[in-house]
Image 1 (cartoon, one colour):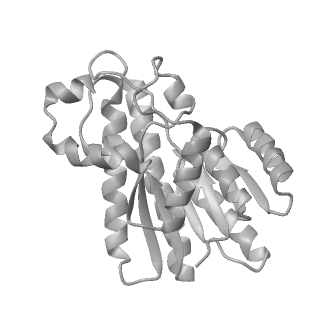
Image 2 (tube, helix red, strand yellow):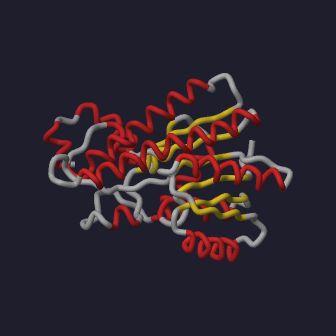
Length: 253
């Protein structure tokens, strides 16, 4: 079935903004949320310049505040019900990449990443599944990372751990609703240009542009497979190799 009404968290920049633009080109109505409301307002103008016919709902959201997540998701659901329609897809995208090696005085930054990327994602998935179970259909999408498949050193330690947790959580939900008309997909992006990758300094290997990455992400999401690697080359093959990599190899990678 075509998913016409889509909720995207962390939509004010990066992958969230890119996916929102691509879905709008396909005629999808959008429920967009993030902490930076001014960025969402600007994005709404940009999208309407591309496709003035799509409906766009905006709300400010800090995903670390669980009660706020439920309030915002229920509000978006009501927005679509007022149109005589339903919320068809939720993309759990909001996240951050702060952090450093453990024990070096950056515990606050590491905890912020852990709470945002995992606890925040858990709240989003709880709120989304509440809606999907009630209406008995929907597509839950978890934007994980290729870093989910192994532990990583330095600034990536906590980030990779949260993405591994998200991968496991999404798989558990998928198994839970296996016999229901509810789909659950885990998306594993490689390096796609964004504010997060820009902060790294030296561009990482195999990085693609945000425009190309957003198109590939939307294409993968629309296929509604259980797992998707974006872009497929070379990241699917890295996924096969990762279990064989030694600690020394991972440290260099």
